[in-house]
Length: 67
Image (cartoon, rainbow, N blue to C red; front, side):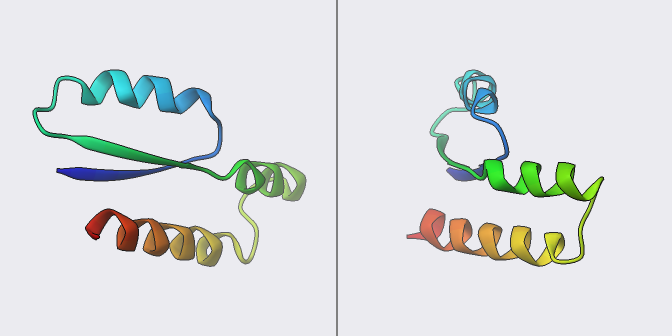
């Protein structure tokens, strides 16, 4: 089973890798987009294009995970 993970901080990679170790056959791929967190912090929360940017990143990651 392939699982694609979108993170805003690198430290989440270690946490999810440890959790996935108990899932037989699980392969995680990680993509870090620190800019998403930075933009949200600068905007004081969710920003207008935030959902679109995240949806695009997730769709791209899903395509890679399926291949």
